[in-house]
Structures are given as structure tokens and as C-alpha cells.
Image (cartoon, rainbow, N blue to C red; front, side, top):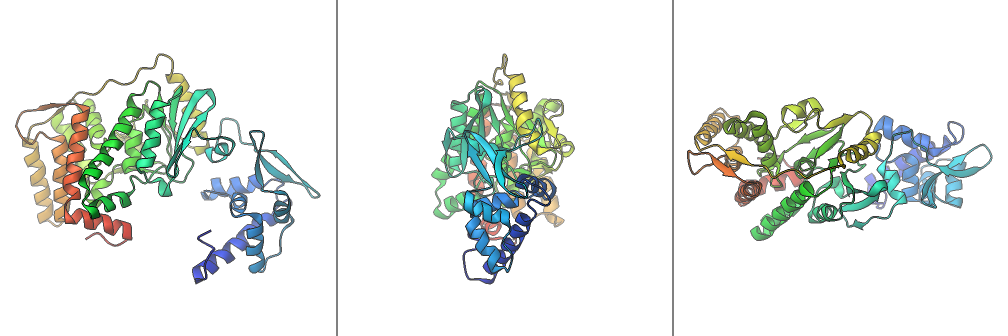
Length: 440
């Protein structure tokens, strides 16, 4: 509605555009196809639309679209008039999602059809009632006692409400948990507006509590007594990816981009991202200094895996453990099968034991940043941010290695995050990101 309500030129453009496009789509019925679903599917699968044109008509209301089409000088197609007279193109009847089908003389409602082994949660959810829901996320029950956590805020940015649903899923876990949504992108990360507000008010205690709640929510997810599978598509960045890092396994769509990008706005991953990245490098190499250096480099640079192969190099994707599908409509069915396969005899993972290297490597990191700063590779605050990342993965108080628990690593992340948040540079970078300005 915000796109078409108003008197500015861009509102008029949107009204004219939508009126023409949606009227054209409706005019294809029934000569091109008898079912609006065919056209909706073509636009979603072929052109990456989030909603098909007939789903848009239902969302706006057929009467509204008819007015838009009339104002744009379009003839009103019979299919559009039928929807205005007899109800939406998609309707739920007795728990089944139906779609209006047309022939040359009449229309009737028939069940929505998808190929075997495929499911779209944007369709399935219309036949369900959530167990719990708020503005940012919902918890759903699926067949077989499975639970599905869906983020649905703007850009699926995570808030305290998002994490409350994650925490509730860990408690009301059913036979397994699926983390998934049917949006274009899984999650752009934690809502930066929240941190901008904390910083503006210097509400450091509230910021620490927010980060701690996030950490405890993902820890509850990790250690709940049933399998947890993350099934993302599109961007899974920052805090969104930290949720996925605490799943037992991932089933990613082939277009998924995975990574921790917080350093780009002058903070560190504060929801277990540094911890888990270090843990995976430590387990892979058996060497604390190598694990610390690799973790520091990829989080400092905000590296992302834009394919399973790239994500594998970052230890964000584990071949033979995590899986990929080419068709995003297969995410739910395959992820559900993975959970069922894991369920017999499932036990939660053991809390990790990690060893951080002594402070000698901290000096190497500092020298690397100083050299890059002198050569113009970095801004001064890049160095500040990088050295705070180093405080998480290095024992900066001694040359001796340091044994740490998972909670110790959580605490180190929060402490580094708060120190950076108190700097004017980080405040400026976050505000610049939110306003679309260049980061100085």
C-alpha cells in the first residue's frame, strides 16, 4: 500500500506500473493457461519474484487492482473481474490451499499443485496457525511433530523478538527443528537500528543484555534434545548466519551466501560467530595459532562464501555433513528428511573445549595491521576493529595457551563488541550504513 498511496510522482508511477502489469497477467487467463498458479510460478522461478502477479492481486485486493488498471487505461480482464466478484485467486478450504482455475466459460477452485518432493512455505503457511508469532518471527508445527522457525521482519533482520521465537523453539522443540523462510534472503543480520539506538542512548547495559540473550538463544538451539537443520537461501549474513552456525546441519540452496560481515561497520560478531569459526578451524588444524590467524583474517575482512565451494574454504560449509540443493522448493522436504534420519538415537553435541594461543601471535596481527595502514590498505578504525577481533581468539595477557569454555568465548565476543560500540568511529559507520552514506 505504501507504494501506491500518495500524490508524489513515484506513487503515480507505481500505480500505473502495477495496474498495467497485473491487468496484463490477468488477461493471459484462460487463453495462455487456465490456472493463475502457472503464471505465478513462472515469475517466481524464472524471474525471482517473491510473489507472483496473482498473489499480488490477492494481497492488494481485486477491487484495488481494477481501479489501478482503469486509471492506467487498461481493459479489465474477465479473470480479474471474477476475483472481484467471487473472492481471491487463492483460498484455503478445509485446510487445503486452493487456486481458482478457469476455462472459457467458468472458473472453479482446485488444490494447488506442486511437483513431488517440493514445498513452498509461503503457500503452506496459509493453511496453518502458528504456535507463536510476533512482528519478527513465527514458530510453526509441521507434520510429524516438526517445528519450523520463520523470520519475517524487514530483510529478515533479527531483533529480540526474533530470538524469543528461537528460544521458544528450543523449548517447544517437537521431534526436530527446521530454520527456514521462503523469502528472497534468509537474513541480512541483526537489526542495526537497534544498535544505533543503544549507542545514541549510551545504553551499554541494554546492549550487553541484548547480545547475551542472542547468545543464550542460539546456545539453547544448539543443545536442545532434537536435531536442528538450517535451510537458507539467498543472503545469510551476520547474526542470521550465527543462528545457522548453531544448527546441527545445513541444507543450503545453491545461491546461498554465508558469512560474518560485522567488521564492515566496526563491530565484531557477537552471537557466537567468532567462537564457532575458531572452533572449526581449531578442530580442522589442531593448532591454536593457525586457528586464531585464519579466524582473525576471515572475520576481519568480512569474507563470505558465495557458493558451497567458497564457504567450504571458510569452514562455514562442511561437505559430507552439510548439503546443497539446486531447487529451493526442495529445501523443506529434504531438510525434514534429514531431521527424521538424524532423530533415532540423537544426542546434542558436547560443549567444545578450545585452547587459545598466547600473545605472541597478537604482535604478529598488530604488525600486519600497522603495515597495511602505512600502505593505505586500511583505515585507522579497521585496525582498531581487527585488534578487538584478536582479543577474542588470543590470550592477550600471557605467552601461555589458555583453555576456554564456550561461555568464555561468548563473554569475550560481548566485551569486544561493547568496546567497539563505544567508539565514535563505529557509531559513525553504523549511522552511515543505515543512511546509505559512504563510510569514512
